[in-house]
Length: 108
Image (cartoon, rainbow, N blue to C red; front, side, top):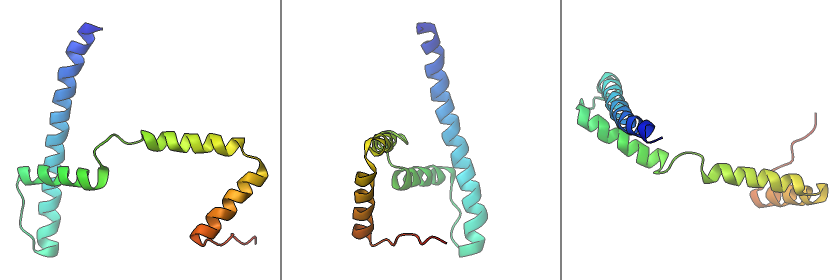
């Protein structure tokens, strides 16, 4: 197990560095290809592309890993839904419809 970690940790670090470098190159290439002709904006450098990539990750991706508590919450709600009686399910539907002003879909 220890030998395996000795190989995996450096490989993971190198993999992350390569991933960020390739991401920076791709972002720079796309930015410099699209924005100057479309909007007249300036060209950016590799380091600005890396910063832009990090900013987008913070703004749109959050700091944690995807899934996590969201997956747990969905699973928990699905389990609770299965345990409800049909009357309880209908009460929940009615509450959601009244709270959000949704209309029942009409049957065709």
